[in-house]
Image (tube, rainbow, N blue to C red; front, side):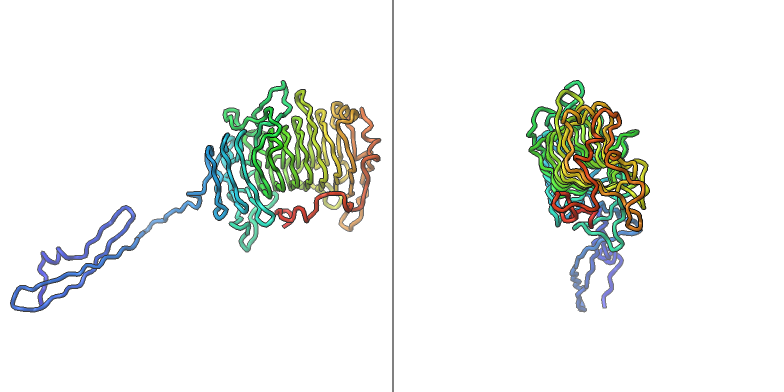
Length: 453
């Protein structure tokens, strides 16, 4: 038997190497030798393998390391629906760029603070292509939402409800279509975006402007306050042109309005707003498109179902809302919220309402002409009402509440300068149930939404 001397032991002892990735190469060997009168011949076979060793430390893994949207998007970008995306801060799709969001994609937003609240802006000249489907809608929500890829939830269910609001900003689409501004300027800065950010400009002279397409999109838990009394709408449409597609959009639990149209000419269909903190659908600045199919469900936090303002400049504009249902927040004949009106028309509003159902509003919640200017547009025929139905609220026993109002009380001209109240019986009626064939959206239309799931 031959023993290694000290030099040999030191030379061939186990060797270690530590690199920046904490990789340790562990060498093992076996010795093959023979005994003879000559000096021993020793052969070594070195076998190497690697392993990773992490001792007494926690490695943080960022799940959004390659799926974060931040800053300006200046070139075409397509998201991957198999991953959850993080919206961080104010993100703008700038002129010439297109953001494509495939069906089933989930975007979760950080909260941000003030003017830097997480918000997605499609600037003038930019485009969004967000075409979900009934089976795979696109969802924009808060990072606090536990929704998973595929639109599923853990067995414990959804972490956030309709009463969870203001966790991030919202979606703003801004276009180059005409809008009615004070002083007849052609562009304006959208509310909710600092004036220092020119991506917030909207308006122009192109009625057919195209900002892209959104279909089957659910926007949840937004409306962050960026300043005192200044919140972001769930979906803001500023000067959006008729070349844009807006179809099947749901807004849930937003602090401010659900969907607001600032001028523009875009048409929109099948809109559902649930539990907004202000108005369900808001129209301003001479919006001149058609909203065909809408459902607004008020909760205790809500204000009006519709709030409709007129033009601010010489450009008049004229909207159409048709085939819509607005459901009040009433519990056993008592209003659940402080406000919760059916609709308010202001500032010389001009447009046409056709096939509208107001259901379950307690006494005192009315359809209102706010002042003389809108009483005038009504008398001129520039604001019209056709086939308006009212379903009275019920008590817990299924009986119509005792203190319901007549049509001339529900339709109220606050200025008393028009025949609006007397005319109510010619364009409205009290019904006991939704009328068949009148075009009001139903559960089938909105079966894809979180509200009906």
